Every structure is written in C-alpha cells, then in structure tokens.
Image 1 (cartoon, rainbow, N blue to C red):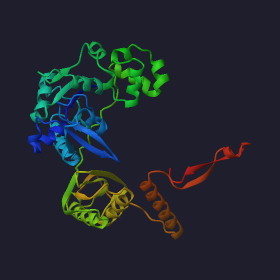
Image 2: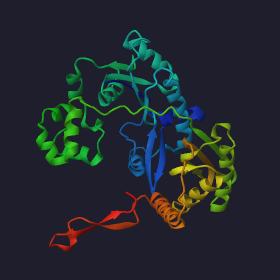
Image 3: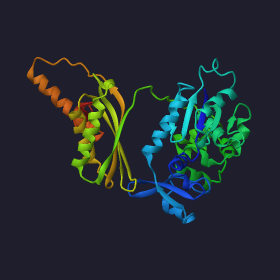
Image 4: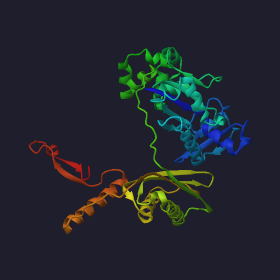
Amino acid sequence: MRILCILLPHFSWHCETLNNPEIQGCPTIITYNTGSQKLVLDYSPDLAGLQPEMPLQQALARYGEANLLQADLPCYRAIFEEILGALEQRSPLVENADLGQAYIGLEGLQMIYPDDRSLLKAVQEAVPAHFSPRAGLAEGKFPAYLAALYSPPEANYRILTDGLTDFLKGLPCDVLPIAGKNKACLHEFGLHTLGQLAALSPGPLQAQFGPEGRKIRDLARGRDETPLYPRFMEENIEESTVLSSVTVSLEAILITVEGLLTRVFSRESLKGRGIRSLHIWTCGWGAQYWEHSLQFKEPAMDIRSTLSRIKLLLEDFPQPGPVERIGLKITGLGYRNGRQKSLFSEVRAQDHLLNDIKQLELRLGSPQVYKIKEVEPWSRIPERRYALAPLNP
C-alpha cells in the first residue's frame, strides 16, 4: 500500500517559537517528566547529538548552557490537531502517528491529483510553512518515514519507487523503530547500517531478538506491512480552564472538573448521548504535565456518574504538584444500552453484583474475581484437575 509520510522535525520547538519568538537562535531544550525522571522531549535544531527521550542530565553534559523549557503538551497537541484536520481535507485516510508525524493513505486520490508531485504539493500546503514540513512517499510506512526523514532540503520531499535497496543500505540502524537496548546490541555486534542487517539470514536475528528479529530484517529490506490506522471521524469535545490560584486540594480540583462537565453536558450535540471515553489532563506550577484516560463500559449519561469515576482516578493517581490548569477531552460518545430486567429479585441482585465486579475490574485493569473450573478431573496430578478462570471473561 502506498503511504505518504508527513514529518515536522522539531515540532515542539517550533510550537514554542510561535509563542516565544525570542528563543530562536538560542540553544533550547524542552523537557518533560516521567515519574521522578526528567527527559528530553525536543530541542532546537542547532543542538547536534541529542535524542528525544534522552535523560536531561546526559543532554546537559553536552550543552550545559542551553535554556530549559518545560513541555506544554496540551498546546502542542491542540496545534497538531489543527494540522491533522487540514490534512484530512486532502485525504480522509490520516493516521496520527506521533507529535509532528502523520501517515496518509493515497487510495482513491488518483482522480483528484493527476500525479504524485501535485499531491505532495497540496499536502505540504496544508501545513503552515513555519513547521518546515517534509514528505516521503513509498510502499509501506517505514520506507515512507525514511523518505521524509532524508528528503533533500531543496525539495523537502522524496518519492521512493525504484532504487529502494540502494537508498536503505547506507542508513544507520538507529532509524529502526525498536527498543534502544536492541539498537545498542546491534552496534555491539558490529551491525551499524541497514545494508548489513539486510544481508543477514533471518535465523541469527531471530535467535538473538526473538520475534522482533524478523521485523528488524524486514524493515532493513524496506518491507513494512503495518496497516494504516486512520483517525475516526468522530466529534471530540474539549473543555479547559485556568484556576484562579494554584492548588493541591482534591476537593478544589473536583469542583473545577464538575464545572467543566457541566459545560460538556450542556452542549446540544450531547443530548441523548453519554460519554464512552475521556482524557483528563492537568498542567501544574512550572508546567508539570499529568494525563490519564477513562473508559466507560456503558456510556456515562450524567455529571454525577462521570465525576465519581474521575474522583477514583484522581485518588489512585495523585497530582505531581500544584495544579494550575485542568482540561477534559471527550473522545467517544454513545447511546444508553437497553436492558430488560428480570422479574425475580434474586436474579436482579446477582446482575447487580456482576456489574459491580465488572466496574471494579475495569478500574483496576485486571480480573479480580475467579471461579473454579474443571479442566482434567481424571488427572492424577491435583493441580491439573481444576483451574481458576475469570468470572467475567
């Protein structure tokens, strides 16, 4: 399948330059927190040798004089959502791969764009020139990504039809979408380029890396059969607010969330429908970012039921610090499921109990209640006669 990759290098840094033009020309590192660790999210293009997700201490060892900015992820995502919406005006098949990276399916566009170059021009015009978009067109996601990554500066696009093997053989192994420890292992074995990997038989790679070994060899040869996952054309509802003063109080946060839910449920588009999934995020003092998602087994039809689930989430995952901004993003809506209740009170009680167990397991993310099930009752080994099976498979 022919895929077009749109790549916006240093996307987060470009987003920051929109609000702070003075940082252009200054060495800048954008950081984010994961647990107690500070990592690099992005950096200004002049800082060679840095990588996203690199520990901040390692980055400062190279560039100790660089300015540090805390990542404003809600802002970056909002900007990228607008860009994705513009790309969907060119093709309905748009996949959001990562911040600053998208894949576009070209199926059915032959009648709109006479050739590949006119298509590339139309897609690049959908992205603001401030972000310096690059484009790559090839068979499969990974070759399209590499075509965009190594596109010539004068054209900012590359079309890979013939000569794929010659193009790939000199590229470093670090471009592979695999775990960092596996990349380090490849270098330890003296395998530094995709051409060296492509020349190997699948046996040694599978013996060392397991199922990922075949994937490594296929990607090194330019074969990527990963399907395209287009975004759902479904309405998203977003609400956010800035608190009058920073707070660490759970009660104050819940009151603010209740106000946001009131605005959500007052929308005309939500009448008769409930919330199936939502994301809640907070931005703290110093731009510390916190985000979690909630999935509802049945659509939440009112503020009370939604707020009770959010309260449990906030209790289980405390804030990393004082909260300054709070936002909600509703990513799934649905209608209430019809139910026919039993005439017998015992059956109704059992149904209620099973529903409570389902909600508990949904909250904790794993089965909590099991039943004993016969497996091999004739076996001489007692452990093989019975097994524990989840009550709600």
